[in-house]
Length: 97
Image (spheres, rainbow, N blue to C red):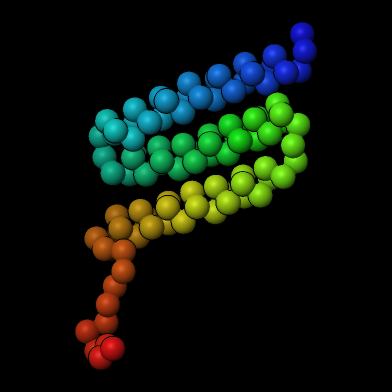
């Protein structure tokens, strides 16, 4: 069996698991479950890009994978702050600007 067939099978498996996580994002029983599912979708998207770059034989997609990882981390951090404080951006009462 060719390595391209194995990569295609892996892509299909990751995409199916991504669809399952999207269902968890929509139907999640709590906000924490939804945040974890969004983070998992980000990781799975990184896996899809990595497998696709292996399939087409390019190496510059590593930058895209790193960008997706940074954005997924920032999204998770923002949701965690929202869950903790109830708002993302806090304003000082003494701030006159």
